[in-house]
Length: 597
Image 1 (cartoon, rainbow, N blue to C red):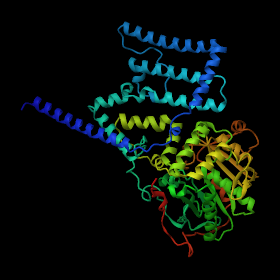
Image 2 (image 1 turned 90 degrees about the vertical axis):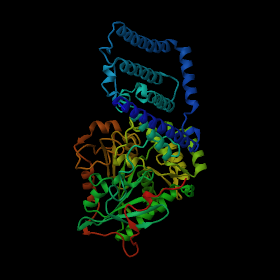
Image 3 (image 1 turned 180 degrees about the vertical axis):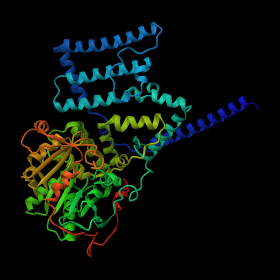
Image 4 (image 1 turned 30 degrees about the vertical axis):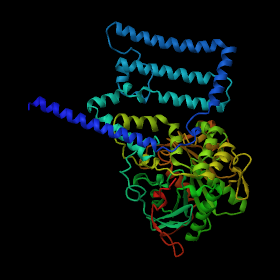
């Protein structure tokens, strides 16, 4: 057999193997889709009413002010025709080169070919023209209220993001280059990744953002030494092992959000807020919430407060012998901590000495980017879903949050995984991001209707455990940390809630970065700074204009504030006592439990 014949035989064998693999993957793909459980269609589809309103406004404008509509159309078509003619003239000259002005761009078009290759540059520029025309049409449409405009703006953005040329193989130079370089192997690997994701998520389209095999809880993530010393139906209470000979007398409890797992605060040792707090000489307790299944369908906000917050306060006071405790609440747990503080005031209970809030909303009057998800159409769909299943499943929340940053959390990872055939990175934060938790049906409805939609805590008062609670009832010393680029709890909305609190001692800062990176910002990294301004009497914009940017992490500033409220130094306390025996090592059992839904 000649060398040429051997090569041809090898190529033929490789092609046959790939075709067999594609056939196998195609069958797995069909099977994976067949496993998909139907969810209420309102969770995935926009309310037709918003498009009806937009169309009605469009026709009214066409009747009463036709020149404006025609002006928009002429501008768009004029630019599109000019763009087309410029490309045709370049071809007629026999020169395949892009125009001198390669047009606007964004990070999706980082490959130089988007500017240097005429085919890709033409596609990019036309996409940017289409995107601008759609955005302008939304902004210029009259007759819509602000809520309707935000919804229309959101869905218009989803359409333009979805139709970006980078999302399609034939118009993605990175994916095409990789396919040529690997002789098509990248496309087969991408199909393998797609099928694996669908199989893992019961037919749901959820891109795996990180390598799930790279981390092991208690080993290289969530590994700060500690013990579970109390457990009930709602939580495990972890007490961390001291690293100093002495600690502050007043203990500290952290209540993390129960939408995700607590170990966002304990990723690697280098960026662990939990480890850092312990190393500063504090007796630290952290709540690890249960991941509920359908048996928790009737668990409400009152259960999280009674069997969560109040139970943790009671047990920590017993273990440490202290009458007061300092507390921290992150995101939804900060919102609920504020409710708990108002409840304790109504009861005359002074168990909380000071309260720290991480990106916590208490006034929902401006719903910001969440406007589309807090309208009746969406919440009606949520209620139908949770009434049927018993919980709001974690993948629904993950998908909702992802669509707020669809380019970063959906399309870019999907391109790398499915078009480029790349394996997901070993990134601790993204690993945590994919490890969500469910919400009980009753609690989800109370939160969405009472707090988010009706804004009862800041307005009429939120009914809980026999009391009507208001944000103005929170009169504890408060240290509020918010994040400049937070798309979940916008800092200006957090500021408005803190302003209304009845506390005389209020500290408010804005960390650079977003909802997670702005909080998990260790001093050793010196990556993000933070803004400070002691005057909370003005508007958020005025506060920002007068604020000073401080270099580095906010952690040391907060610790200086906390140490003044943490009492004298006492001998270090080791986890548990005679009435609180050690149940297991941290991070406990809740964090890895997988409920059946």
